[in-house]
Image (cartoon, rainbow, N blue to C red):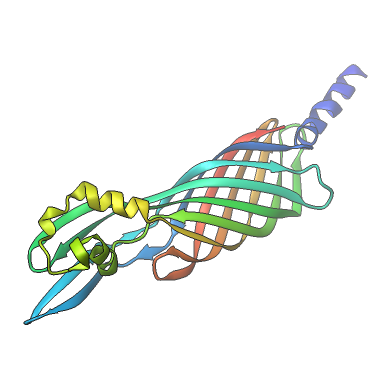
Length: 230
């Protein structure tokens, strides 16, 4: 009788420990490519000021998450991610500076309402469920270098001035100080898998937000979480 009771108790454990929520670490990869750019401005006498940037793709995200599943019918979750990818930019008017390395990146927060679609259970060992949801997101993102931003950096806004008076540190500091704020909505779907207190997620998220990714109002990402159920 005691063995039967112990078996039933262990089988119920994965469900009971997840009754409140969970927290942990999150990693992801954006499914987006930002192509190389070249923008110019005519300075007269056949001379142009030219800004170039290199292509980058599939930025990596790292962060953390927390969720609550004690509410009937829905779960609430929030996560924060640091996203970044390196690229090069250079300027020529025709005096050339660069190329300089800089990081395009963002600090992003997501708040999501999540709902289970289908639950699967393996007695004693684990349980899994499919889920879907959507919500609201906010971002603070560094701008991609452009000819317009370079014009702001030049003395008196003169793109024909000597650019060597501007250091690489000045350019990077300027970009860092001119972060862009963006917000939008998102949808997501995936699989949650639990073994005792170990809690993991694998899900796809599609984010709709303007001014976040250059030349794209939406992009997808594949994300993985691992943490603890409480």
